[in-house]
Amino acid sequence: MQIVLLVLISGTFFQCNRCVKSCQNGVCIEKFCDCFEWYEGNRCDRLIVDQHTGQYGGVFYNYINDTEKEVELTLTLISDSIRTLEADSFELRFTTANRFAVKERLFEAQLVQGEGEVNGTRLTMRLDAVDSLQQQLGLFQLEKRE
Image (cartoon, rainbow, N blue to C red; front, side):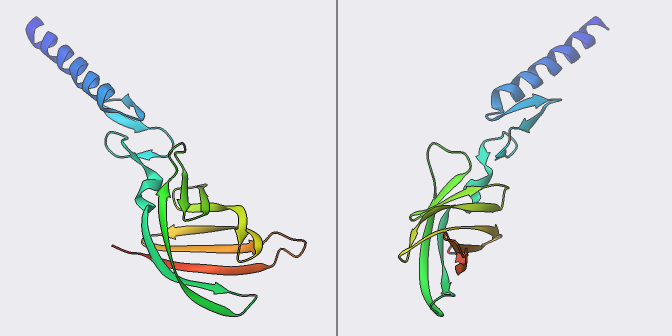
């Protein structure tokens, strides 16, 4: 009886120990990794926003000039942030796993900011002019390239 109890206790201890060592960005709770915010996976080893990195292509609709043009954007993770991606010269700061705010910057001779979301392989980003009118400048509608 004592041997069985010892085996059960040591098995539980070692199982939890393995969980603690393998939870890269989380904590072991009842033999499962509970991930910190912005991480996912069985070992909490993947950034949630990392799934959105890659090449996107599609159209930018300029509402002010009533024009549209083909565009390509590459989303990469900014090295010192766990929730900010760079899309060429746009900085996308994720507020949820799929929604983001676009940091203010100069684009097509206007100061803009915006917001957007990634839904599956589709990225939509709206830009607004940063002026007294706050008019909508345009919209990116892009698909992830495989």
